[in-house]
Image (cartoon, rainbow, N blue to C red; front, side, top):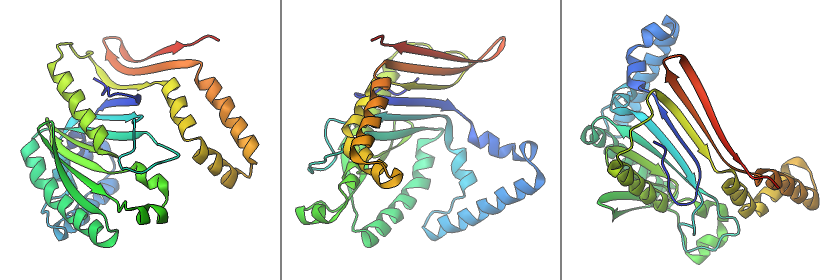
Length: 275
């Protein structure tokens, strides 16, 4: 099922067994492509080993389950105590794991090295917090008043956070949305609804919520339109208003891709507001 968190704008779910695809590579692509893939796998393994993890990409893929989910949601406040003129939505991805303990052995050495590099080069600090029975690892930018004054405020929409819990690897742009995803996974685990048979992918977008997110980022959008498109401020603002008025006519849209007895179907459900 799709992830549903407070303020959801977009949610997507798809089923792909990438480990099985790797194992069947010789049947799926040409010999030359297979050689390139295997060469890249060896080179990536050498880089991982230098970072302290003796694993290849192909081995890591074998630990991934077949279900991948993404959610984008508006947040009530930024992840820092910083006033932002343009509060961007947060996003998270949840990847199902075949073996949580094995994936943890692979991932933790890599994340420790990445955190160390970022702390040295970018002054990024790594912190852990316990939430909902999980250990969250978050990366924080310097955010003293002096730091904030010297940096692009848009960057303070992001406080990357990841965790391994509930049989999933979860990575989000803020700790808040990672916590929301954990709650959503718990709610789904308690639900008794049967999954749709043959479902391979599903997407949902709340178009009215998307319009609200764009409106909240108005200053940044208009500024970018002026810089990149050469429009004046009034014209850029008017064009954005036209787009928002169209989006607000639509409430939500859900698309499902399903294998049935008769073949492959794509089902679309759109809710429309009439003026």
